[in-house]
Structure formats: structure tokens, C-alpha cells
Figure (cartoon, rainbow, N blue to C red):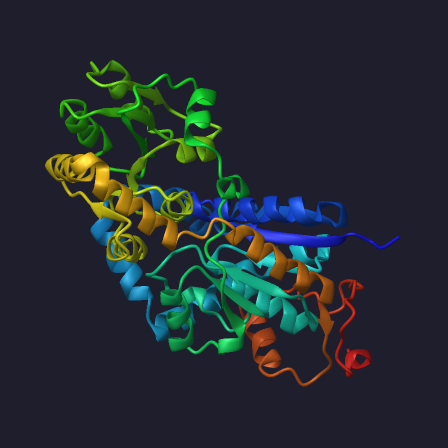
Amino acid sequence: MTEPKRLLILTADAGFGHRSAANAIAAALQETHGSECTIEIVNALDDARTPALLRDSQSDYDRLVREMPALYEVGYQASDASAPSTLVESALTVLLFEVMLDLVHRIQPDVIVTTYPLYQAPLGAVFSITRRYIPLLTVITDLATVHRLWFSSVPHLCLVPTEIVRDLALEYGLAPGRVEITGLPVQPALAREDDRSALRAELGWSLRPDLKTVLAVGSKRVGGMGEMLRALNHSGLPLHLAVVAGGDNDVFQRLQAEQWHVPARICNFVGNMPTLMRAADCILCKAGGLIVTESLACGLPLLLIDVIPGQETGNANYVVDGGAGELAATPLDALEIVCHWLDQDGALLAKRASNARCLGRPRAAYEVAERVWSAAERGPVVRGRGILGRSKLIALLRQHGVRQLGMSRFTPRLGKHTDASRNAA
């Protein structure tokens, strides 16, 4: 009997998008190859040996983007250049090398997928020092504005969501054959084509047929959602509001206390977001890569109410330029946009929905899964001596106190393809 392939998916919890993409890929792999593999999703930043600087960056991300967006933008732009990125990669190699080495040793994966950019350089160091090169696929989780750190030379494939990001990858020096457009992975459930009326009945929404459902999705990172919803509540428009506060307890409590003049359902957390998205007529949200991609996959027009400077600017531009939504800076903007969408029997809303469907890639998770599976079938390659830069890398790690380099640490499981110099290792 053939031994199951071992698939390792690396992610992080700085925002929701990285983890969600990882989960979507795992779900697609489980559906298509579940009996032939084991899948492990790991957030390496949560390892106790990861320096607090990196471990805490996940929670600091929330605070920075909400309380100090200008400072976040300055840091993002300052590090998004060639020299700073090179320094950051060297630092990451030192800080995360032992964590990455232990993961590879423990799991011995046939393929590694990463939905977070900080792991690529340390994995490259592990591959070089152990001389065991595991297929590595990077899945980029922003639609347009992408930090230079994503475009590492280490991965065998860089899977990008859009043509815009593919062009960036080539501009930063990646070979065309190593960059493929797959879309950004979303939950496979979003690829289903269900009747909207049936979904609403399933959700218990007994609505007048003339009402349009606005799905409002918030979180602690989303600013201004309460004010936007109050404007819609007092608009007199034929609306139904389905609100998910996403863990923002202050907003959730204020909205529960609101006197609603339109039908409204207020939740803090939900476990059926794909169903809600497919049942709605449009969505009010921030310009995060995940929520934007999921909305496009469902053909949902987007009313964007918050944009984190830096990576989300490109997401917002992608939606607006593609005619799939609009940006509202104030509650009055939101009210004006929705009025225009509903005018003339919802003609503009229908146009925005059509454009969203054109931009969406609901089967992206399956496209990524097939590339991951193909790489897993090839498996790791062991290379012999003469690896460029290996001696300097060993010196760098030892200089910074890394002693366990794993050069003879384990006997690897090998794929079908190995270098001719394999025995020299």
C-alpha cells in the first residue's frame, strides 16, 4: 500500500486572510485527495522558541492598523525596498531557522505550502544546509499591493491571485515559469451555485421580495461600521441588514441596543459565512484580501468602508477599477452609493454584481490544491556538495548562536526525483 503523502501548510494569524487561505487549501485537498494524504496546518510564529518580536507581531498588527495606520504605512513602505528586504530575510533566517528545521524533521513533508511570507528565507536555509529540497509553494494573499518579501527566490512556485501581482513578481525578478495565476483560495463552499431564495429560507429570512440584503462584516480591525449602518438604518431604503461584528464586542453591543427601522439581524460570530455571503445582495466590509476575494467569488458588490494603508490600498483599487464596488469614506458616502445601486430597479447593483463575478475565482482553492498535489507526488530532492552560498549561510547562523544546524540530523523520506549527486550528500 502506498504511504500517504505528508502535506505541511504554514500560516500565521496576523489578520484573518493567511489562516483562511490555508484552511481553504486544506479543505480542497481533503476533498480531492483526502484518502491519499495527511495535512497539517502550522503557525510557526506560535512556537515557544520564536522570538517575542515575531510572535507578538500578530497581535501588534491589530493594534497598529486600527490605532496607528499612518505609522503602519510608513513601516510597510520603508521595508518594501531591496536593501531592507534583504536585511529582513537574513534576520528571519537566524530567528526562525531552528523552528523551521524542527518542523521539517518532525513532519518530513513531501511538500510545503506557505500563506505567509516570513517563512520562505528560513526554509531556504534549511534546504541548503540539510541538502534536502522540499517542494515549496507560496500562496500570496493580497490582490494587488504586495510587499517585496513575498517574492522570494526560494519557492518552486509562487501562486498569485491576479495578473497585477504576476507582473509584480516578474518585475522583482522571479522567472515566468515559477509564477502562476490561480486566484486567492477561498472556502470551497463558496464555489457552489445555490438558489438565493432557498438559502434565505434556510437561514430563516422571511423577507419581502423588494428588500435587498446588505451583509455587513466587521472585526476589531474595521473602523466606522456602526456609523455606516446607522445611516442605512435611517435611510428609508428597502433594505435588510445582516450584521456580523466579528468579535468587536463594543460595536456588537451598540448595534444590539440600536432601534432598527429596517429588518436587521445582529451577530457577533457566525459559523456559516459562505451561506450568508451567497444569500446576500451586496456586502459592506473593509478592503482585506480575504473578504474581498470571497465576495468576488460570490459575485457580491462591495461597499468598502475601511482600507489599511499599504497592502489593502491595492485591493480597494482592484475592486473599484473593476467596477465591482465602491469606496465610502463617510456615512453620507455609503448612503449615496446604496441609493444609486438601488435606483432604476437596482440596475447599477446588478452591474456591480456582474463585474464581481467576472473578477471572482471561486475555484481558486482547487487550482492551488492540484499544484500542491503535483509537487507532493514529485517529492523532495537531495542535492550533493557545491551548493552556492551554503558556507556563508552556516557561518551566519553560527555567528548568531545557532548551533543545531541539522546537517546529519535525520534520514529523509525522498520523492521519486533526486539529483545524480544524491549519494554525495
